[in-house]
Length: 141
Image (cartoon, rainbow, N blue to C red; front, side, top):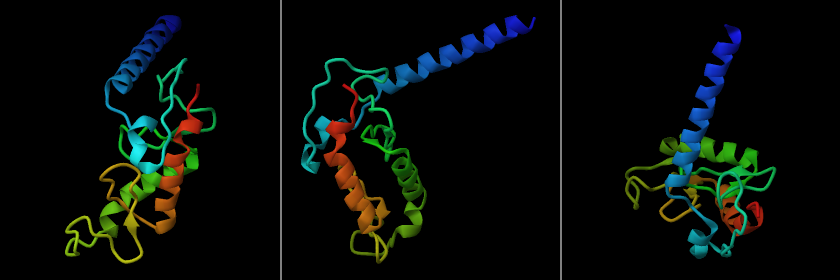
């Protein structure tokens, strides 16, 4: 009886994994090639990994500043990006010169991708630019 339940659970996890992989490969992504305006080199992947051409080298994960952001960064940096996203509303001045996209004093737009107006510290914006510049070097080949 226990084996039958474990088999059903294993099958369910396998099906969920297949579904998630299918979803990830069917949505748009921020590829290194899409970041030309952000000082990122174009790359060619001849043998994509388990997540397609966006598979990160070991030690890196997708940044996910937005769900389709597949620039590879360290796990700590992805956590920081998620924290910045969560704090975005508190860092805006809706009556400023850029309307609801205006950052409060001390914060600037992150600009990890086109129209990324999440307000972050200048150091975090520099980090996003650096991560974009290293995108081609962090993809599994």
